[in-house]
Length: 161
Image (cartoon, rainbow, N blue to C red; front, side, top):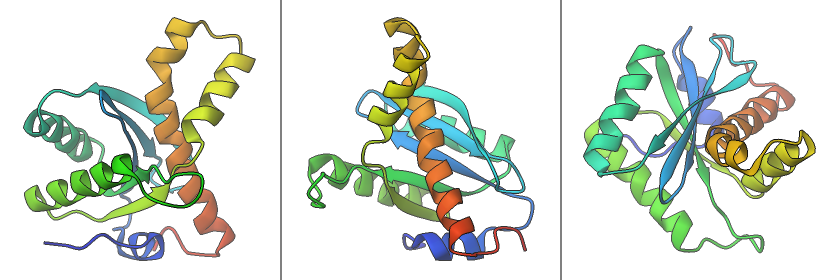
């Protein structure tokens, strides 16, 4: 089983022309976002309504294959004081369970305030509460993925071999 990678390792092992997928894991939904093949921008993709782990995996793996995804950036919900609570533990377990089903390049990315930032932006854009609920998970996934892409650029890491 492949171990979880740190963000720098993920960038180094990503095959040329493959995308990254950002994941915002919630208890009821999984927000997904995709990078472009040049790894310069993140776009919201889809929100999966969670059912059983097996069904959630099948949908996730189908989308990964369809969009040529070479790595996952899974948002890690760290508490504001830097500690990890039950949601962070559940996220780590989700990553381990994915790795038991498929060889994947996965990194965890601090997602503190991602949902709050996205919600604030949608409120500023005057989106209705219903529309915000529909969009928040996949937009949070894009925010998480964009955070990693921005970090890699600032760190001077080559994102495309």
